[in-house]
Length: 466
Image: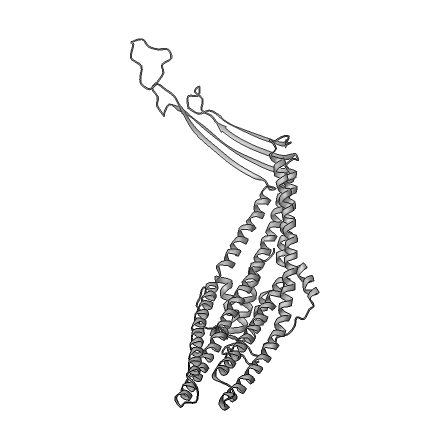
């Protein structure tokens, strides 16, 4: 019997949590949050319920091929009589009619047992095959929902890390801007700079303060989005280790595309749906075929008789066995219409399969290029931080000797903090792109969550050094 995808998910997570022991309970890392999401996320629970509902269809299809047994029973009381006694005429009647009374009646009782077994029903057989294909498609859809859960959790988790990084840089930028403002004010007080430098410093400090406030709200919203998935609040999450490897894909694009054609869940679900619709078309055509049924019946009956003084007749029983043959001749065009409908639905499924293959190809290519681009972007962002730091140092020296003004210092500071944000976000983009590539290829699994979780550290710097 096939194990549903969510069961494999819970099994893998259970092993991982046992191996982590009590340490995993001390921090909110990706694996902890994913385990909570697997049990509490409404979307995955809905997918699980949809699979269970779809799985019952296979039993319904099989029922048309199995025997059906019916038991029926009945009992009735027959009474008759006058509404009221006739007037006394003084002359006795040869056939007197009594007044109606429920005691003066007759009881009829019967019960029967019938069995019906389809001997030949091509429509039922093809419908059962369609149900089996639909059941497989439902299992694939559940596995796809599992992969989507991984991506939703990862996106929400790293959205929190992005906001933490941005908030840390904006906080540092605000502190630096405030320091520049204080120094500028002191220099203005002794007549070394003009009032415009003070105004520029004040504007920069105000902007940094606004950016920090906005990012604090963004972080709160990111944590709320994470809570919506897990059903529990998270005040903080582990950060990505500074030595997390940023490397190119270990396979060329063509190999990823080949893997996608074999493993992509959207393609697999579309293929199974097409096979189910093909069986539906066969079932619609089979409605024009004859059907043969075996019927067996047993009946027991006891009827009341007015000639029986006891009010009940003798019991009788009977049995029958036979084969019924039914040949459809004409149903007002109903069967022909259903056949056309089944063929059109099959054609639509063929187009859906073609679209899934094209979408998968596009997704793999875009994700692969995203990984390759982010690898180069991380390296470039790291160099940009070094350059921005050197530019800031030189600008600060120039400001001290009078060759640069406060505006130059402010712009250099802003460039440095922006470079730090860009570097951190490029690393997060690489992680998401790597997971997206595996999802497009159909190979994304809970093991990827476990592997990624090993690179998350409690207390890791929100702004990692390049």
